[in-house]
Length: 280
Image (cartoon, rainbow, N blue to C red; front, top):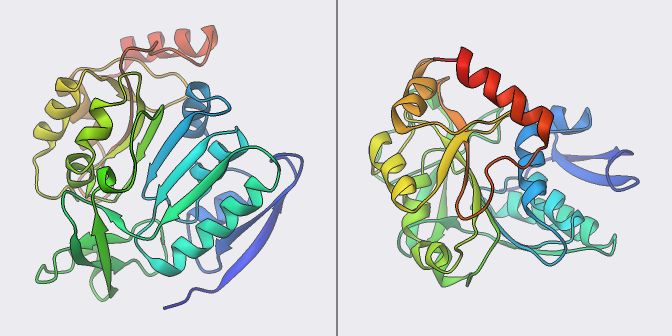
């Protein structure tokens, strides 16, 4: 399977960078073409890394986060299970690496708890919403009629050794399984910060409570990934994640352990304090 692409020029990124996007993508591609994607999340990641830092990106898609990390001088291991999209991500990372900063490698597998294979449901327009399912699973109701593709699964621990500074987990419902496959990496990375998509509707093989309890037991302080994050307990996270309903619910979580939670400066810290008082 191949995807049509187009290359957009981003004059404000690294003094000018060509970046390849999926031609018919409805969400990520147009945002990147306008100059940015997931700006708050990227800012949090960049605040935790420096030249030589190691970053793991699970659910890389076309490589936007991995490219930002490479441009910051990081060494990146990215995981993208759709082979044709993994090839696009690698090309984007190679362009960033040519700027003379970091390096990155794309593993064309899904991050999971154990080696194997599965099927991935390919969203028709939002190509950032491809979801791994077991071969005999029904297609998620909001993706009825979508095409399926067989992909390979590998635990992160089989391909990457710690310590790492930053971990991004955005696997459209497979976050629990991805984390179960990188327990050694977690153990070997005491000063780890992370971004994780927390989407109860799509979560596989665990309850939302279990996923949060796991992260808290690992020592993470958690909050929403915004321009003014503030620490949140488990119940508050669950309320925020469910506020928008099932299919459109969920939030991006930011977490740290053995490192400062507030890394975006005084203005962001004040903004977070105000939100902590106003939001439920």
